[in-house]
Length: 157
Image 1 (cartoon, rainbow, N blue to C red):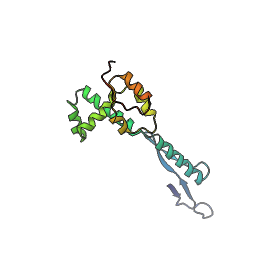
Image 2 (tube, rainbow, N blue to C red):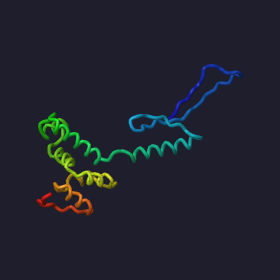
Image 3 (tube, helix red, strand yellow):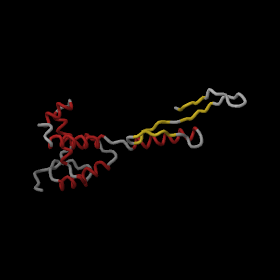
Image 4 (cartoon, rainbow, N blue to C red):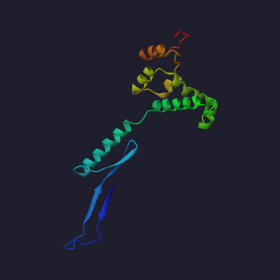
Protein backbone atom coordinates (compact mmCIF):
# COMPACT_ATOMS: atom_id res chain seq x y z
CA UNK A 1 0.00 0.00 0.00
CA UNK A 2 1.30 3.45 -0.69
CA UNK A 3 0.93 6.67 -2.62
CA UNK A 4 2.82 7.72 -5.70
CA UNK A 5 3.21 11.41 -6.43
CA UNK A 6 4.11 12.75 -9.89
CA UNK A 7 4.41 16.42 -10.67
CA UNK A 8 3.32 17.68 -14.09
CA UNK A 9 5.79 20.51 -14.11
CA UNK A 10 9.24 19.85 -15.50
CA UNK A 11 12.03 21.07 -13.19
CA UNK A 12 15.23 22.53 -14.56
CA UNK A 13 16.99 20.11 -16.88
CA UNK A 14 13.73 18.47 -18.09
CA UNK A 15 13.75 15.66 -15.52
CA UNK A 16 10.39 14.45 -14.28
CA UNK A 17 10.33 13.56 -10.57
CA UNK A 18 8.26 10.79 -9.05
CA UNK A 19 8.15 9.92 -5.38
CA UNK A 20 6.68 6.74 -3.88
CA UNK A 21 5.74 6.89 -0.21
CA UNK A 22 4.86 3.49 1.32
CA UNK A 23 2.32 3.62 4.09
CA UNK A 24 -0.20 1.50 5.91
CA UNK A 25 -3.40 2.64 7.58
CA UNK A 26 -3.68 1.14 11.08
CA UNK A 27 -6.59 1.59 13.44
CA UNK A 28 -5.53 2.35 17.02
CA UNK A 29 -8.51 2.36 19.30
CA UNK A 30 -11.11 4.66 17.80
CA UNK A 31 -8.73 6.59 15.56
CA UNK A 32 -6.80 5.68 12.45
CA UNK A 33 -3.11 6.43 12.03
CA UNK A 34 -0.88 6.31 8.98
CA UNK A 35 2.34 4.40 9.58
CA UNK A 36 5.27 5.22 7.34
CA UNK A 37 8.68 3.51 7.16
CA UNK A 38 11.51 4.69 9.33
CA UNK A 39 14.49 3.86 7.12
CA UNK A 40 13.56 1.33 4.47
CA UNK A 41 10.57 -0.58 3.08
CA UNK A 42 11.63 -3.76 4.94
CA UNK A 43 11.51 -1.97 8.28
CA UNK A 44 8.10 -0.65 7.34
CA UNK A 45 6.80 -4.16 6.70
CA UNK A 46 8.14 -5.47 10.00
CA UNK A 47 6.76 -2.46 11.90
CA UNK A 48 3.36 -2.88 10.29
CA UNK A 49 3.39 -6.59 11.18
CA UNK A 50 4.23 -5.76 14.81
CA UNK A 51 1.39 -3.23 14.93
CA UNK A 52 -1.03 -5.77 13.49
CA UNK A 53 0.00 -8.41 16.06
CA UNK A 54 -0.30 -5.93 18.92
CA UNK A 55 -3.75 -4.90 17.74
CA UNK A 56 -4.90 -8.53 17.42
CA UNK A 57 -3.61 -9.32 20.93
CA UNK A 58 -5.46 -6.34 22.40
CA UNK A 59 -8.88 -7.31 21.09
CA UNK A 60 -11.59 -8.16 23.55
CA UNK A 61 -12.29 -11.79 24.23
CA UNK A 62 -15.72 -13.35 23.88
CA UNK A 63 -15.97 -13.39 27.67
CA UNK A 64 -15.43 -9.62 27.91
CA UNK A 65 -17.98 -8.95 25.19
CA UNK A 66 -20.52 -11.23 26.94
CA UNK A 67 -19.90 -9.50 30.28
CA UNK A 68 -20.51 -6.12 28.70
CA UNK A 69 -23.66 -7.34 26.97
CA UNK A 70 -24.97 -8.92 30.17
CA UNK A 71 -24.52 -5.70 32.15
CA UNK A 72 -26.09 -3.69 29.33
CA UNK A 73 -29.15 -5.94 29.37
CA UNK A 74 -29.32 -5.72 33.16
CA UNK A 75 -29.28 -1.92 32.93
CA UNK A 76 -32.13 -2.08 30.39
CA UNK A 77 -34.17 -4.16 32.84
CA UNK A 78 -33.28 -1.92 35.80
CA UNK A 79 -34.33 1.20 33.89
CA UNK A 80 -37.55 -0.59 32.85
CA UNK A 81 -36.87 -0.07 29.15
CA UNK A 82 -37.71 -3.77 28.76
CA UNK A 83 -40.27 -5.65 30.82
CA UNK A 84 -38.58 -9.04 30.81
CA UNK A 85 -35.73 -11.18 29.53
CA UNK A 86 -38.12 -12.46 26.85
CA UNK A 87 -38.46 -8.89 25.52
CA UNK A 88 -34.69 -8.56 25.32
CA UNK A 89 -34.40 -11.93 23.60
CA UNK A 90 -36.95 -11.00 20.97
CA UNK A 91 -35.32 -7.60 20.41
CA UNK A 92 -31.88 -9.22 20.05
CA UNK A 93 -33.31 -12.08 17.93
CA UNK A 94 -31.91 -14.65 20.37
CA UNK A 95 -33.25 -17.58 22.32
CA UNK A 96 -34.50 -16.72 25.81
CA UNK A 97 -32.36 -19.46 27.34
CA UNK A 98 -29.17 -18.04 25.83
CA UNK A 99 -30.01 -14.53 27.05
CA UNK A 100 -30.59 -15.89 30.56
CA UNK A 101 -27.27 -17.75 30.50
CA UNK A 102 -25.41 -14.60 29.47
CA UNK A 103 -27.24 -12.50 32.06
CA UNK A 104 -26.10 -14.88 34.82
CA UNK A 105 -22.67 -13.29 34.34
CA UNK A 106 -23.98 -10.18 36.13
CA UNK A 107 -24.25 -12.24 39.32
CA UNK A 108 -20.53 -13.07 39.48
CA UNK A 109 -18.32 -11.54 42.15
CA UNK A 110 -15.93 -8.82 40.91
CA UNK A 111 -12.94 -10.89 42.08
CA UNK A 112 -14.18 -13.87 40.08
CA UNK A 113 -14.59 -11.71 36.98
CA UNK A 114 -11.03 -10.38 37.37
CA UNK A 115 -9.65 -13.90 37.66
CA UNK A 116 -11.64 -15.19 34.69
CA UNK A 117 -10.68 -12.27 32.46
CA UNK A 118 -7.04 -12.71 33.49
CA UNK A 119 -7.08 -16.36 32.40
CA UNK A 120 -5.94 -16.38 28.75
CA UNK A 121 -7.37 -19.75 27.74
CA UNK A 122 -10.82 -19.48 29.34
CA UNK A 123 -13.74 -20.24 27.05
CA UNK A 124 -17.01 -18.34 27.34
CA UNK A 125 -19.03 -21.55 27.13
CA UNK A 126 -17.18 -22.96 30.18
CA UNK A 127 -18.13 -19.93 32.25
CA UNK A 128 -21.74 -19.72 31.08
CA UNK A 129 -22.54 -23.40 31.61
CA UNK A 130 -20.77 -23.71 34.96
CA UNK A 131 -23.07 -23.95 38.00
CA UNK A 132 -22.06 -20.85 39.99
CA UNK A 133 -23.07 -20.54 43.66
CA UNK A 134 -25.15 -17.51 44.56
CA UNK A 135 -22.83 -16.41 47.38
CA UNK A 136 -19.79 -14.38 46.26
CA UNK A 137 -17.58 -16.01 48.89
CA UNK A 138 -18.40 -19.46 47.54
CA UNK A 139 -17.77 -18.22 43.99
CA UNK A 140 -14.30 -16.99 44.97
CA UNK A 141 -13.55 -20.30 46.70
CA UNK A 142 -14.66 -22.26 43.64
CA UNK A 143 -12.36 -20.27 41.34
CA UNK A 144 -9.42 -20.66 43.74
CA UNK A 145 -9.47 -24.42 43.11
CA UNK A 146 -8.99 -24.81 39.33
CA UNK A 147 -11.13 -27.41 37.63
CA UNK A 148 -13.60 -27.47 40.50
CA UNK A 149 -16.96 -27.97 38.80
CA UNK A 150 -18.97 -29.33 41.70
CA UNK A 151 -22.62 -28.43 42.19
CA UNK A 152 -23.10 -26.19 45.20
CA UNK A 153 -25.75 -26.68 47.82
CA UNK A 154 -27.83 -24.10 49.63
CA UNK A 155 -25.02 -22.60 51.69
CA UNK A 156 -25.94 -19.56 53.72
CA UNK A 157 -23.91 -16.47 52.83
